[in-house]
Length: 407
Image (tube, rainbow, N blue to C red; front, side, top):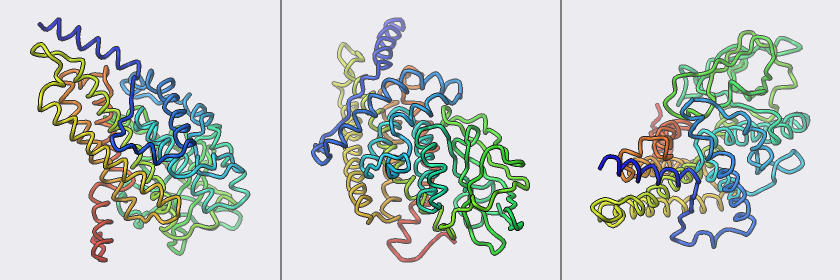
Protein backbone atom coordinates (compact mmCIF):
# COMPACT_ATOMS: atom_id res chain seq x y z
CA UNK A 1 0.00 0.00 0.00
CA UNK A 2 2.81 2.39 0.93
CA UNK A 3 4.68 1.48 -2.25
CA UNK A 4 1.60 2.08 -4.35
CA UNK A 5 1.16 5.51 -2.73
CA UNK A 6 4.77 6.42 -3.43
CA UNK A 7 4.58 5.24 -7.05
CA UNK A 8 1.35 7.15 -7.74
CA UNK A 9 2.55 10.31 -6.03
CA UNK A 10 5.93 10.20 -7.75
CA UNK A 11 4.26 9.86 -11.13
CA UNK A 12 2.07 12.89 -10.45
CA UNK A 13 5.13 14.78 -9.20
CA UNK A 14 7.11 14.05 -12.35
CA UNK A 15 4.24 15.36 -14.46
CA UNK A 16 4.13 18.55 -12.43
CA UNK A 17 7.81 19.24 -13.05
CA UNK A 18 6.97 19.61 -16.73
CA UNK A 19 5.11 22.79 -15.66
CA UNK A 20 1.73 22.11 -17.22
CA UNK A 21 0.18 25.23 -15.68
CA UNK A 22 -3.15 26.40 -17.03
CA UNK A 23 -4.55 29.73 -15.86
CA UNK A 24 -8.05 29.76 -14.33
CA UNK A 25 -10.43 32.37 -15.77
CA UNK A 26 -13.99 31.67 -14.62
CA UNK A 27 -15.24 35.19 -15.36
CA UNK A 28 -13.66 35.53 -18.85
CA UNK A 29 -11.39 38.31 -17.62
CA UNK A 30 -9.24 37.70 -20.69
CA UNK A 31 -11.96 39.53 -22.63
CA UNK A 32 -10.96 42.67 -20.71
CA UNK A 33 -7.35 42.40 -21.88
CA UNK A 34 -5.88 43.69 -25.13
CA UNK A 35 -4.13 41.41 -27.59
CA UNK A 36 -0.85 43.01 -26.50
CA UNK A 37 -1.59 42.15 -22.87
CA UNK A 38 -2.23 38.52 -23.78
CA UNK A 39 0.90 38.33 -25.93
CA UNK A 40 3.03 39.76 -23.10
CA UNK A 41 1.52 37.29 -20.62
CA UNK A 42 2.10 34.39 -23.00
CA UNK A 43 5.73 35.43 -23.51
CA UNK A 44 6.34 35.65 -19.76
CA UNK A 45 4.55 32.36 -19.11
CA UNK A 46 6.78 30.63 -21.64
CA UNK A 47 9.83 32.28 -20.08
CA UNK A 48 8.86 31.03 -16.61
CA UNK A 49 8.19 27.52 -17.88
CA UNK A 50 11.53 27.41 -19.67
CA UNK A 51 13.88 29.33 -17.38
CA UNK A 52 12.44 29.30 -13.83
CA UNK A 53 10.28 26.22 -13.26
CA UNK A 54 12.94 23.60 -14.14
CA UNK A 55 15.55 25.03 -11.73
CA UNK A 56 13.75 26.94 -8.98
CA UNK A 57 13.15 24.01 -6.63
CA UNK A 58 16.84 23.14 -6.63
CA UNK A 59 17.91 26.75 -5.99
CA UNK A 60 15.33 27.15 -3.21
CA UNK A 61 16.43 23.91 -1.52
CA UNK A 62 20.06 25.10 -1.63
CA UNK A 63 19.13 28.67 -0.62
CA UNK A 64 21.02 29.89 -3.70
CA UNK A 65 20.26 32.84 -5.97
CA UNK A 66 20.09 32.04 -9.73
CA UNK A 67 22.10 35.12 -10.68
CA UNK A 68 22.27 34.06 -14.33
CA UNK A 69 18.56 34.89 -14.63
CA UNK A 70 19.21 38.63 -14.11
CA UNK A 71 20.44 39.08 -17.69
CA UNK A 72 17.60 36.88 -18.97
CA UNK A 73 15.03 38.99 -17.12
CA UNK A 74 16.51 41.99 -18.91
CA UNK A 75 16.33 40.28 -22.29
CA UNK A 76 12.66 39.33 -21.86
CA UNK A 77 11.70 42.85 -20.70
CA UNK A 78 10.85 42.08 -17.07
CA UNK A 79 12.84 45.04 -15.68
CA UNK A 80 11.05 48.39 -15.69
CA UNK A 81 8.40 47.52 -18.28
CA UNK A 82 6.51 50.78 -17.63
CA UNK A 83 9.65 52.95 -17.98
CA UNK A 84 9.69 54.85 -21.33
CA UNK A 85 11.55 53.18 -24.17
CA UNK A 86 13.99 56.08 -24.49
CA UNK A 87 15.54 54.95 -21.19
CA UNK A 88 15.57 51.25 -22.08
CA UNK A 89 12.18 50.37 -20.59
CA UNK A 90 9.24 48.74 -22.30
CA UNK A 91 6.88 51.72 -22.40
CA UNK A 92 4.04 49.39 -21.37
CA UNK A 93 0.94 50.11 -19.31
CA UNK A 94 0.32 48.97 -15.75
CA UNK A 95 -1.89 46.01 -16.64
CA UNK A 96 0.97 44.62 -18.72
CA UNK A 97 3.31 45.21 -15.78
CA UNK A 98 0.89 43.41 -13.45
CA UNK A 99 0.62 40.43 -15.77
CA UNK A 100 4.43 40.18 -15.93
CA UNK A 101 4.63 40.15 -12.12
CA UNK A 102 1.81 37.59 -11.95
CA UNK A 103 3.62 35.21 -14.27
CA UNK A 104 7.01 35.58 -12.57
CA UNK A 105 5.58 34.98 -9.08
CA UNK A 106 3.67 32.03 -10.43
CA UNK A 107 7.18 30.68 -10.88
CA UNK A 108 8.54 31.98 -7.55
CA UNK A 109 7.99 34.94 -5.22
CA UNK A 110 11.73 35.44 -4.84
CA UNK A 111 12.15 35.82 -8.59
CA UNK A 112 9.30 38.32 -8.67
CA UNK A 113 11.03 40.18 -5.82
CA UNK A 114 14.17 40.43 -7.95
CA UNK A 115 12.24 41.92 -10.86
CA UNK A 116 9.89 44.00 -8.70
CA UNK A 117 12.72 45.66 -6.77
CA UNK A 118 14.62 46.40 -9.97
CA UNK A 119 11.61 47.98 -11.70
CA UNK A 120 9.51 49.56 -8.96
CA UNK A 121 12.10 50.42 -6.33
CA UNK A 122 15.24 51.23 -8.32
CA UNK A 123 14.31 52.21 -11.88
CA UNK A 124 11.07 53.95 -10.90
CA UNK A 125 12.65 56.38 -8.37
CA UNK A 126 15.53 57.15 -10.72
CA UNK A 127 13.02 57.87 -13.50
CA UNK A 128 10.53 59.72 -11.27
CA UNK A 129 12.89 61.66 -9.00
CA UNK A 130 16.19 61.59 -10.86
CA UNK A 131 17.92 64.03 -13.20
CA UNK A 132 18.09 63.46 -16.96
CA UNK A 133 21.77 62.59 -16.56
CA UNK A 134 20.95 59.97 -13.89
CA UNK A 135 18.22 58.47 -16.06
CA UNK A 136 20.51 58.02 -19.04
CA UNK A 137 23.40 56.77 -16.90
CA UNK A 138 21.55 54.05 -14.96
CA UNK A 139 18.20 53.12 -16.49
CA UNK A 140 19.33 51.41 -19.73
CA UNK A 141 21.83 49.23 -17.84
CA UNK A 142 19.24 48.34 -15.20
CA UNK A 143 16.66 47.55 -17.89
CA UNK A 144 19.02 45.20 -19.73
CA UNK A 145 20.13 43.40 -16.58
CA UNK A 146 23.70 44.62 -17.01
CA UNK A 147 23.26 46.20 -13.59
CA UNK A 148 21.26 44.94 -10.60
CA UNK A 149 19.83 47.39 -8.09
CA UNK A 150 18.37 47.44 -4.58
CA UNK A 151 16.30 49.81 -2.44
CA UNK A 152 17.44 50.92 1.00
CA UNK A 153 14.63 52.07 3.28
CA UNK A 154 14.06 49.54 6.10
CA UNK A 155 16.43 49.78 9.08
CA UNK A 156 17.09 47.42 12.01
CA UNK A 157 14.98 49.59 14.32
CA UNK A 158 12.65 51.19 11.77
CA UNK A 159 10.47 48.94 9.61
CA UNK A 160 6.81 50.01 9.63
CA UNK A 161 7.91 53.49 10.82
CA UNK A 162 10.41 54.61 8.15
CA UNK A 163 10.16 58.25 9.23
CA UNK A 164 12.25 57.34 12.28
CA UNK A 165 15.23 56.31 10.14
CA UNK A 166 18.69 57.05 11.49
CA UNK A 167 20.74 56.71 8.30
CA UNK A 168 22.02 60.20 7.53
CA UNK A 169 24.32 62.21 5.30
CA UNK A 170 26.22 65.46 5.71
CA UNK A 171 27.27 68.01 3.12
CA UNK A 172 31.08 68.02 3.04
CA UNK A 173 31.41 70.66 0.31
CA UNK A 174 32.39 68.58 -2.72
CA UNK A 175 30.57 65.38 -1.64
CA UNK A 176 28.11 63.92 0.89
CA UNK A 177 29.20 61.70 3.77
CA UNK A 178 26.74 58.85 4.34
CA UNK A 179 26.44 56.79 7.56
CA UNK A 180 23.95 54.20 8.77
CA UNK A 181 22.57 50.76 7.95
CA UNK A 182 19.62 49.16 6.21
CA UNK A 183 18.38 45.56 6.50
CA UNK A 184 16.07 43.04 4.79
CA UNK A 185 17.22 44.39 1.43
CA UNK A 186 16.35 42.19 -1.56
CA UNK A 187 19.15 41.97 -4.18
CA UNK A 188 21.68 43.72 -1.94
CA UNK A 189 24.49 41.10 -1.97
CA UNK A 190 24.63 41.26 -5.78
CA UNK A 191 23.52 44.86 -6.32
CA UNK A 192 25.64 47.22 -8.39
CA UNK A 193 23.65 50.25 -7.25
CA UNK A 194 21.43 51.06 -4.28
CA UNK A 195 18.77 53.75 -4.06
CA UNK A 196 19.20 54.77 -0.42
CA UNK A 197 16.92 56.95 1.67
CA UNK A 198 18.62 59.01 4.36
CA UNK A 199 18.17 62.22 6.36
CA UNK A 200 20.17 65.38 5.69
CA UNK A 201 21.30 67.78 8.40
CA UNK A 202 17.85 69.38 8.45
CA UNK A 203 16.23 65.98 9.04
CA UNK A 204 14.67 65.86 5.54
CA UNK A 205 14.53 62.45 3.85
CA UNK A 206 16.37 62.39 0.52
CA UNK A 207 17.35 59.74 -2.00
CA UNK A 208 20.94 58.92 -2.92
CA UNK A 209 22.34 56.56 -5.55
CA UNK A 210 25.14 54.56 -3.94
CA UNK A 211 27.38 52.43 -6.15
CA UNK A 212 29.22 49.24 -5.30
CA UNK A 213 32.90 49.98 -4.88
CA UNK A 214 32.41 53.20 -2.95
CA UNK A 215 34.72 53.01 0.06
CA UNK A 216 32.89 52.13 3.30
CA UNK A 217 29.88 50.61 1.51
CA UNK A 218 29.30 46.89 2.24
CA UNK A 219 26.40 44.48 1.66
CA UNK A 220 26.51 41.53 4.12
CA UNK A 221 24.22 38.68 3.10
CA UNK A 222 21.33 37.48 5.31
CA UNK A 223 21.47 33.71 5.87
CA UNK A 224 19.24 31.05 7.45
CA UNK A 225 16.00 32.18 5.81
CA UNK A 226 13.07 29.74 5.66
CA UNK A 227 11.37 32.01 3.12
CA UNK A 228 12.37 33.51 -0.25
CA UNK A 229 15.27 31.08 -0.26
CA UNK A 230 16.03 31.60 -3.95
CA UNK A 231 16.06 35.37 -3.49
CA UNK A 232 19.20 37.13 -2.31
CA UNK A 233 18.73 39.27 0.80
CA UNK A 234 21.17 41.32 2.82
CA UNK A 235 22.08 44.53 4.58
CA UNK A 236 23.44 47.86 3.41
CA UNK A 237 26.12 49.28 5.68
CA UNK A 238 27.47 52.82 5.22
CA UNK A 239 30.62 53.76 7.11
CA UNK A 240 31.63 57.28 6.10
CA UNK A 241 30.75 56.62 2.45
CA UNK A 242 31.66 59.51 0.16
CA UNK A 243 28.75 59.95 -2.26
CA UNK A 244 29.21 62.36 -5.20
CA UNK A 245 26.78 65.27 -5.13
CA UNK A 246 25.47 64.37 -8.58
CA UNK A 247 24.14 61.12 -7.05
CA UNK A 248 21.45 62.91 -5.04
CA UNK A 249 17.95 62.42 -6.52
CA UNK A 250 17.01 66.08 -7.11
CA UNK A 251 13.23 65.68 -7.19
CA UNK A 252 12.62 63.67 -4.01
CA UNK A 253 11.98 65.46 -0.74
CA UNK A 254 10.49 63.89 2.38
CA UNK A 255 8.83 60.54 2.97
CA UNK A 256 6.62 60.96 -0.10
CA UNK A 257 9.57 59.87 -2.24
CA UNK A 258 10.06 56.34 -0.88
CA UNK A 259 6.33 55.88 -0.20
CA UNK A 260 5.59 56.60 -3.86
CA UNK A 261 7.99 53.80 -4.78
CA UNK A 262 6.30 51.46 -2.31
CA UNK A 263 2.90 52.12 -3.91
CA UNK A 264 4.35 50.99 -7.22
CA UNK A 265 5.90 47.87 -5.66
CA UNK A 266 2.76 46.98 -3.70
CA UNK A 267 0.75 47.20 -6.90
CA UNK A 268 3.05 44.60 -8.47
CA UNK A 269 2.79 42.39 -5.38
CA UNK A 270 -1.01 42.34 -5.63
CA UNK A 271 -0.66 40.79 -9.10
CA UNK A 272 2.28 38.61 -8.10
CA UNK A 273 0.57 36.99 -5.11
CA UNK A 274 -2.32 36.15 -7.42
CA UNK A 275 0.16 34.25 -9.60
CA UNK A 276 1.33 32.18 -6.62
CA UNK A 277 -2.31 31.48 -5.69
CA UNK A 278 -3.12 30.34 -9.22
CA UNK A 279 -0.11 28.02 -9.27
CA UNK A 280 -1.16 26.37 -5.99
CA UNK A 281 -4.74 26.01 -7.21
CA UNK A 282 -3.71 24.54 -10.56
CA UNK A 283 -1.36 22.05 -8.89
CA UNK A 284 -4.07 21.02 -6.39
CA UNK A 285 -6.71 20.64 -9.11
CA UNK A 286 -4.40 18.51 -11.23
CA UNK A 287 -3.29 16.38 -8.29
CA UNK A 288 -6.88 15.85 -7.08
CA UNK A 289 -7.89 14.53 -10.52
CA UNK A 290 -4.94 12.12 -10.69
CA UNK A 291 -4.60 10.91 -7.10
CA UNK A 292 -6.69 7.75 -6.52
CA UNK A 293 -8.02 6.82 -3.08
CA UNK A 294 -10.90 4.44 -2.29
CA UNK A 295 -10.84 3.46 -6.00
CA UNK A 296 -11.60 6.94 -7.34
CA UNK A 297 -9.87 10.32 -7.75
CA UNK A 298 -9.93 12.43 -4.61
CA UNK A 299 -11.44 15.21 -6.77
CA UNK A 300 -14.71 13.26 -6.53
CA UNK A 301 -14.99 13.87 -2.79
CA UNK A 302 -17.12 16.76 -1.54
CA UNK A 303 -14.54 18.26 0.83
CA UNK A 304 -11.89 18.40 -1.90
CA UNK A 305 -14.38 20.02 -4.28
CA UNK A 306 -15.24 22.54 -1.54
CA UNK A 307 -11.58 23.52 -1.23
CA UNK A 308 -11.15 23.87 -5.00
CA UNK A 309 -14.38 25.86 -5.37
CA UNK A 310 -13.37 28.28 -2.62
CA UNK A 311 -9.90 28.68 -4.11
CA UNK A 312 -11.32 29.54 -7.53
CA UNK A 313 -13.80 31.97 -5.97
CA UNK A 314 -11.05 33.92 -4.20
CA UNK A 315 -8.79 33.84 -7.27
CA UNK A 316 -11.62 35.23 -9.42
CA UNK A 317 -12.29 38.07 -6.97
CA UNK A 318 -8.56 38.86 -6.82
CA UNK A 319 -8.32 38.86 -10.63
CA UNK A 320 -11.10 41.43 -10.83
CA UNK A 321 -9.47 43.57 -8.13
CA UNK A 322 -6.17 43.50 -10.04
CA UNK A 323 -7.75 44.34 -13.37
CA UNK A 324 -9.75 47.27 -11.97
CA UNK A 325 -6.74 48.57 -10.04
CA UNK A 326 -4.70 48.33 -13.24
CA UNK A 327 -7.25 50.46 -15.08
CA UNK A 328 -7.15 53.04 -12.28
CA UNK A 329 -3.33 52.99 -12.32
CA UNK A 330 -3.30 53.57 -16.08
CA UNK A 331 -5.63 56.54 -15.57
CA UNK A 332 -3.40 57.95 -12.81
CA UNK A 333 -6.23 57.55 -10.30
CA UNK A 334 -5.09 54.61 -8.12
CA UNK A 335 -4.81 55.67 -4.47
CA UNK A 336 -2.58 54.32 -1.73
CA UNK A 337 -5.64 52.90 0.05
CA UNK A 338 -6.80 51.08 -3.09
CA UNK A 339 -3.35 49.58 -3.55
CA UNK A 340 -3.21 48.58 0.12
CA UNK A 341 -6.53 46.76 -0.17
CA UNK A 342 -5.30 44.79 -3.19
CA UNK A 343 -1.91 43.92 -1.68
CA UNK A 344 -3.39 42.83 1.63
CA UNK A 345 -6.32 40.88 0.19
CA UNK A 346 -4.41 39.09 -2.54
CA UNK A 347 -1.53 37.97 -0.31
CA UNK A 348 -4.02 36.78 2.32
CA UNK A 349 -6.01 34.68 -0.16
CA UNK A 350 -2.78 33.33 -1.68
CA UNK A 351 -1.59 32.16 1.74
CA UNK A 352 -4.92 30.50 2.47
CA UNK A 353 -4.99 28.84 -0.95
CA UNK A 354 -1.43 27.55 -0.47
CA UNK A 355 -2.44 25.97 2.85
CA UNK A 356 -5.58 24.39 1.39
CA UNK A 357 -3.61 23.15 -1.62
CA UNK A 358 -1.10 21.55 0.75
CA UNK A 359 -3.97 19.66 2.36
CA UNK A 360 -5.13 18.33 -1.00
CA UNK A 361 -1.60 17.17 -1.84
CA UNK A 362 -1.42 15.31 1.47
CA UNK A 363 2.08 14.34 2.55
CA UNK A 364 3.46 15.05 -0.92
CA UNK A 365 2.57 18.69 -0.38
CA UNK A 366 5.56 19.24 1.89
CA UNK A 367 8.08 17.94 -0.67
CA UNK A 368 9.92 19.75 -3.42
CA UNK A 369 8.12 17.60 -6.00
CA UNK A 370 5.38 20.23 -5.87
CA UNK A 371 5.61 24.03 -5.54
CA UNK A 372 3.13 24.33 -2.66
CA UNK A 373 5.41 24.49 0.40
CA UNK A 374 7.83 26.80 -1.38
CA UNK A 375 4.98 29.19 -2.26
CA UNK A 376 3.64 28.98 1.30
CA UNK A 377 6.99 29.85 2.86
CA UNK A 378 7.62 32.62 0.33
CA UNK A 379 4.23 34.19 0.96
CA UNK A 380 5.06 34.47 4.67
CA UNK A 381 7.60 37.11 3.60
CA UNK A 382 5.31 38.70 1.03
CA UNK A 383 2.59 39.20 3.67
CA UNK A 384 5.13 41.19 5.72
CA UNK A 385 7.24 43.19 3.28
CA UNK A 386 6.16 46.39 1.52
CA UNK A 387 3.83 47.06 4.45
CA UNK A 388 2.74 44.35 6.87
CA UNK A 389 -0.74 42.82 6.81
CA UNK A 390 -1.77 44.92 9.81
CA UNK A 391 -0.24 48.15 8.52
CA UNK A 392 -2.34 47.86 5.36
CA UNK A 393 -5.41 47.42 7.56
CA UNK A 394 -4.51 50.69 9.29
CA UNK A 395 -3.98 52.46 5.95
CA UNK A 396 -7.51 51.42 5.03
CA UNK A 397 -8.74 52.37 8.50
CA UNK A 398 -7.32 55.87 8.11
CA UNK A 399 -8.98 56.12 4.68
CA UNK A 400 -12.35 55.06 6.13
CA UNK A 401 -12.33 57.18 9.31
CA UNK A 402 -9.93 59.99 8.51
CA UNK A 403 -8.07 59.10 11.74
CA UNK A 404 -4.53 57.66 11.43
CA UNK A 405 -4.06 54.91 14.03
CA UNK A 406 -0.31 54.51 13.58
CA UNK A 407 0.61 56.44 16.72
